[in-house]
Image (cartoon, rainbow, N blue to C red):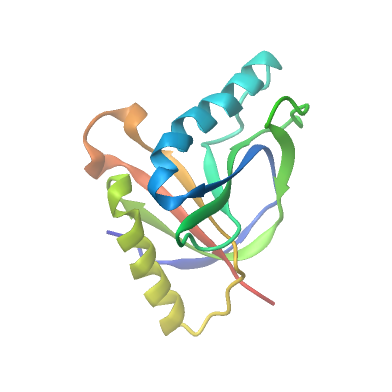
Length: 154
């Protein structure tokens, strides 16, 4: 389900971002339109993505998701509607890659968090998922890849 986790340094990343606070049961209703909104803002400003899109969560999801939909960019996006320029700060992270459909991400995170606990790592409250390979590549979700990142404290 997940690759062997690693500790690595993640560089700072400029992003176009759209922040959302939504009930967990409504996440699927907001994710697609939010992603489209960010990519539309980039397209209107003729800014190309500098990598795969991601979600930056300010805390682990509970009954709500408090997060940003982000697209890495090399040129800061100009604010338009709900889309704003942003940055994910450089940090030391625990990282792994989850293999499979999005419905299994919770279990993948659970496995990853168990590993983090076994290593006695101190983590920050935030985390991010980078969608390396997804539905745009085909219907076989066993080929999908999502990078899981948990920044380390101190």
